[in-house]
Image 1 (tube, rainbow, N blue to C red):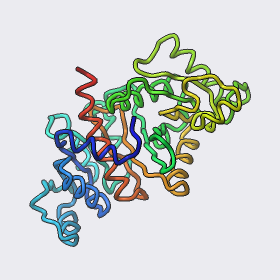
Image 2: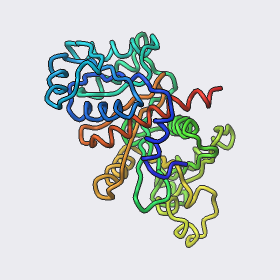
Image 3: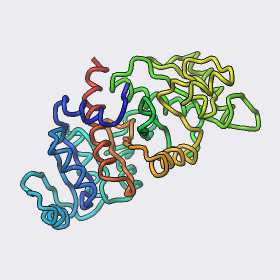
Image 4: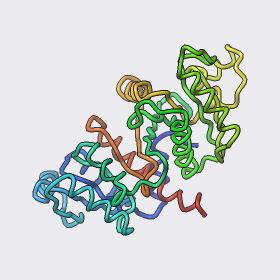
Length: 306
């Protein structure tokens, strides 16, 4: 179990360095994070995009461009497909979004002929770490899937558990979030949660325990769960928070970061490699943590799969 996001840096430094390819790398904050990750020895960077702009950023920051492999590209689309070719040819291990529209990159990722989608569904898993909480919380999906169906929520859980298992979790505790802990026909989030739990009981997902619906306080506070008389191994001990829609997941994630002062990281799961998909509003530190998360995930997959 991760106690905080510094644990990611510690784990990443113990792994073999991974080849990170950045699409449209002409972004100062991205290069800041990539430079820090390189100095830590956890990645070997490949920067794709307008070469002159990338070199200009590197020069202004006083860095040595000879430390980077830079591939010139005239458009975001060209940069995306060049990066995917490197991934498919096993010449790169991790894909990272730079200064381009997310839709452009993901359109390339899911392309039937040239893409790298591996699972039934791509989903985002965000990590938030609070200074006064005893564990890192995994938040999904607050970035990609807008109103996931019951079957898609099961896919989202499968992706999240694939991540936690690669990070060393033995029995991930997954909680389905709603406004209340009781099923109410007028609240689709509770109905869906109940259906997800029933389906997973029929076809269990390895290495996890799934329960819900729960109000958020019952998942993150043992006292709240006890006060309400809730009996569940997930209540008060949750690792993964599965939100009913992108609205609720996104609001929780961003509120945690910008008001709760949580440190954060995030990657997309479901492709043939981890995808570092950060927002322009994310700090360089958040981007660094996301790179470290991708490194640890990619390294851990070999252990899980063997």
